[in-house]
Every structure is written in C-alpha cells, then in structure tokens.
Length: 117
Image 1 (cartoon, helix red, strand yellow):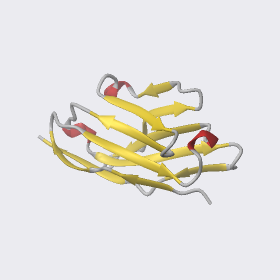
Image 2 (cartoon, rainbow, N blue to C red):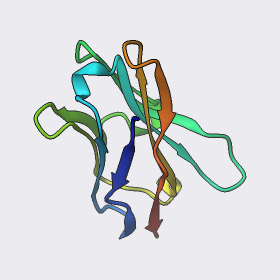
Image 3 (cartoon, rainbow, N blue to C red):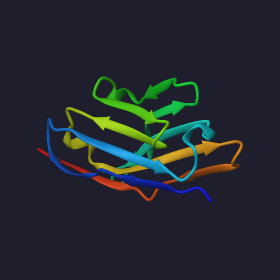
C-alpha cells in the first residue's frame, strides 16, 4: 500500500519561506512522476510543480523562480521549497504521485499554507 505523508505547511508572512515535504512509503525511484498541486478556496486544483523520474521539472508560471521541487532518494521524500511567498499562494497543497510498476496514482492528505499580507 502506498502512502504519501505531507508536512511543512503553516502560516507565514508575505516574503517568507516554507518547505513542504512529502514522504512516500515506497522507494521514491519507483514513481514515474511526483508533484505538488494546490487548491485555494473556490478555485480548481492546479499543478504547482512536477518532477518526472529522469529529474526533469516543470512549474506553473506564477511560481517560477520562487519555488523549487526536489527529492531525496535516500529519505524517499519529495520537497517543495517555497520562497518569496505571496498571499495568492495561500492554498491547501497536495502531494501527487504516479507509478506504473506500483499501479498507483494518488494524493497525500494535503497541508495548509497561509500567507499573510
């Protein structure tokens, strides 16, 4: 059974930083892609950052230059480093993972990020 456990959300002032973590219950190299999505109140869930197995990353335009997705293959954890946070970054952030070998596509439980102005 695959589990994704997120941590690191919280309340921060505009301009501040947070780092989100998503720990997997399986070896992270078994996942073809891992990413972070977010959903603000009244809005659709949107992709924030994604990393595929070869290490290629992509970001939504609004976070480019501020957010960085990375992974630790030993800790089986994917991170989202968020710098220069803005109030419009406020949302619930979800970890997402896909694995062909594990026949898995799923989500973490979500972690709240609130950026005050």
